Length: 149
Image 1 (cartoon, one colour):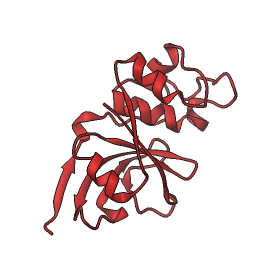
Image 2 (cartoon, rainbow, N blue to C red):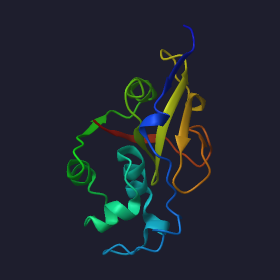
Image 3 (cartoon, rainbow, N blue to C red):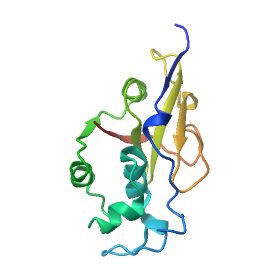
């Protein structure tokens, strides 16, 4: 099959959890956005709200309230089984928050064969590291896929 490009970069904002405007905001259960806030930062990317805005709106736990944050901003959380095929399909319409071990990244672009997707076909915004593709060694197997509708 021919290469397909699905690019949702216009539907997300790249944020870093170490941004000086919010990295030191402390969670009520320990840690800061800068040290353990990858999930909140990824949610912020997908709903286009900064981690500081989300925090100031009352979401102050390091355990991400995925549904609560989404509904607070008029979004509905959706999940799909964690496969590369499902991820490629999701990117037809939405950027996705992907669990990679104990870390989360936003996958915003797929460029490859949708019938045989490879990790290197996916572009990511990583809230803790430089951006790249899903095949970097720091990412273990995909453990979850979430997106907001």
